[in-house]
Each structure stands twice: as C-alpha cells, then as structure tokens.
Image (cartoon, rainbow, N blue to C red; front, top):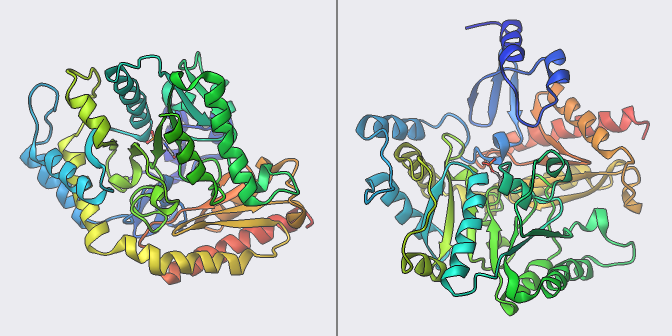
Length: 453
Ligand code: PLP
C-alpha cells in the first residue's frame, strides 16, 4: 500500500472526480478512504470517520456485511455474467424480481433493470413514451419535473433534474421536459402563507402547466417524494395528495423517484408511502444493493407493464440489465433489510430517536432555521436570522464552511447550498446517533462563531 501523499499525487495526476473543481481539489488533496465497517470509514492516515451520509445516501445496511460479500463471491463463481436480451434469463434476476414484487406495494409486479438511478430515469422516459404510444396517444410527450430536483447526471437525468448549474454545462437538453416550482416552504413561501396553503399552491402549478401544455400532450410528472440532493426538502402534507389528484384528473402518469427514499430511509420501504400517494412508476437504485455493487431498476405498475408486454418489442436495454452478481447482492441486501427488521427499526426506534436528538440539539440554534426529516434522513436549514426565515446571502459558502468543520471533526455531513443534510446507514445505533449529533453540533457552533453569530 502507498502513503497518503503518494495516493494524492497519483489521484491528482490521473483521476477526474465527479462534481469537483479539480484545480482546487488537487491543491488541497482528497481524503483517501481505505476501509469501512458499520457506519465508520477509515482514511489512509488512520483516522476514523463517522459516515452521516451512508456514502451517497446508499449504504443502507452499513459497510462490510459478510452476507453481501458472500453472495457476490458465490454468484461470480456460479454464473459471473449473462445477459437477458435474447430469450434468456437466469435465477438471480428471477429471484430478485419475485422478491421485489413481494416487498413493493401491490400494483408493482414487474421490474426493468439498469446500473444506476440516472439510467433508471432514462428508462422511465422510455417506458412513459412507449406506454402512451401503445395507448394510441403518441402526443402525450411532455414530462413535468421541478426546479431543484435531482434525477441524475446522464443527459436525460440532468434534463429531468432542475439544477441550473448542470443545465448550463450540457450541449443540449432532452425535448419535452419542463419544470415547475418546488415545495420548499422555508426558502420560498411568502411570509404570510401557511405550509398547507403553500403546498397546495405549489402542487397547483402542476395543474396550470398541464393546462398550458394541453393535457393531451402531457405524459407524466416526476418527483422525489422528498428532495434529497435539493436539500432534504419535505413538502407540506397538502402537497402530494394534490399532485396525485391532478395527475389522475388529467391522465398524467405519476413517477416517484425513490432512488434515495426507497428501501427504508423514511421508515417505510418506499418514501411515497410516507406521503400517502400511489405512483405509476418508481425509480430505484442506491439502497437496492446498499451500494455494494451498482444496480438500478424501474418498478412498473401492472397496467403499464401489461401495455409493454402486449405490444411487441420494447427497444431498450443495457448489457448489464439484471446483472447476475448485482442481482445476487441485491437479494442478500433486501433479505437483511427484511429479516433483520431494519426498516421497522428505522420507523419505530432509530428514526424517532434521530429526529428527536436533532431537534433537541438545534431547535432555537442561532443559525438553524428548521430541522426537517423522517426516519433516518434530515435537513438542517442554515439561516442568518432563523425566526425571520432570513437566509444567508452567501448560503452556499456558509454550507461549505460548515461541511469542512464536520469533515475536520471526522463526521461526514453534506452541504447542499445552505442546508446541511444527514442520511446515515439504517443500522446506526443510538450511541452512533449521539456521536453524529454531537459532532454536527460542534461543527455548526463553530460555523456560527466564525460568522460572529
Ligand atoms: N435520482 C435521485 C433522487 C438521486 O438522488 C440520484 C443520485 O443521487 C439519482 C437519481 C441518480 O442516481 P445515480 O447517481 O445512481 O445515477
């Protein structure tokens, strides 16, 4: 093995990181993560870091589970690869599909596989267009998404997403994708509006957009049940039921991007259940394999699956659709989540404890405007004057400052603009929650002190 300096030099010489300013990063040098177990990471200098983010919101069962390593090893020896294109299939993908049908809510009995959430959303677009074509309604082409949504980094995923800084660097966007406002109460509601009224108002932007485009031209609406990369934004409770009502009224498919919310994050198997809505398609990834190997999927409502099955060839697929090793790992992962009662523990024990600790630590804090979340996901709004809902003029800078304080204190907590977000592995213990909250408090206190607040 190499030392930290040598790793950094080679990294700078040969590796371009995603979403990174490489000039700056190469000067500072990345932290080199060499090992992980449970909720802890170790760097190449031997520091132990508590991972408040489960990697990128994905390591739901925690790091280093033998069962997943064994499943991969066994499958690689048995059938390391085969495709599912030309009249072939294999046991891991069959078993995984049956297991997912068991775990997902009732109308979801068919699954299409890919390697990531981004590809999942590309696949959603393909399925939506195919579905409406089979219904004799090829004009239904528009897909409506939201500003500050994140749906991935492929051209289609990034077009669906509502991140301007990503759109600016793209050669072109995918046609027929439009955006409406996000249900971000703290940041965008007028001072005199209640959360419920704001939720309704933002949902009704969907109706206005459908009417503007013509319902006969609108194929689908896509949304993360709660926005993850957008800052863990939990919509007011009025929002999702109104979105669903509007989708049904105008015959617009409802797509839940469950890439972060799926597989237990909120204490429900799927986050749309937490908000009480019933989508037609679900994008899955991350927690599907707890990040041990790449895999994504689209869960397809029976009605849509029927249309795809009964109408000839669907011209879409990936070399690794339903990869046997990924499928074997997914099965082992889902069985851990189910058989160890991990999701129930998030709902009844770990989640309520985490939410309570965060609120005790940060309610009334001089630079925290709100603490939101459910289960084991939370967002902390940084604010200059919390009670007046006055945000920092340079909020993204303040977030990065806070993130660096966390990092230096051996806690991974991510900044998304002026919101600090947490999403630890679902197996986090009460003691580990105490450690995360204490370290987050130290970092946010240090941020406030540096700003003189
Ligand atoms: N959708 C959501 C809601 C996500 O949060 C992400 C990634 O963070 C994606 C899609 C894209 O997934 P991937 O990075 O696996 O392509």
